[in-house]
Image 1 (tube, helix red, strand yellow):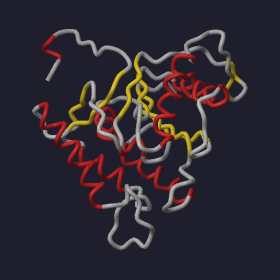
Image 2 (spheres, helix red, strand yellow):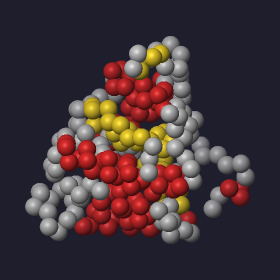
Image 3 (spheres, one colour):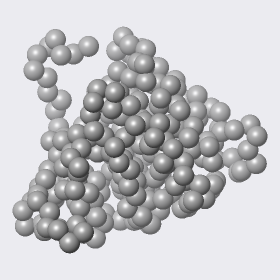
Image 4 (cartoon, helix red, strand yellow):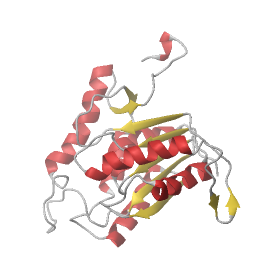
Length: 238
């Protein structure tokens, strides 16, 4: 299956927190979108791998994505080396996306910056003919996405552009709350973590609202890019 957009996250819930409004919007426009999680989030303080797996499936259903896979890398300990790059390259060549979205370029959690660079490097290497891969016994043709974008996470990185997600904020928040083990619930007996507070959930909503305010819409999500943003004409800007 060829996808239009492929979003990567170091952990299940990274994509939902960073760019699920954009994903929901693109799906509504008829785009084929997929999500690939690098790890199963097994080092997470709350919940379990099995619970997280179920939550990620529910979130994928809410967003209406075409596929969701997990590369089962080691949470906290994966590295940006050839072995890990080849796993990502296989996925890029399998789904041949025009656009790849991945983790923030720098963040509080060490896996986010690592995951960002790993996916970005793999996108480049995936276009080299002398990097050979097979998947399920079949030789894979080379493929390089047109662009790589990075969503924002814990840190307040200044975005290079924002996407209007007005009308999709509810879908974004529903996909986040699918991870009931990870986020705030007044009835939870799990340990409190930095993301398991009411303040954190409110901050996700408020950031989308603030980005929207700054560009004259209700809600927006921010991204950084690895190259100049180009438009056909000034009228393309909102």
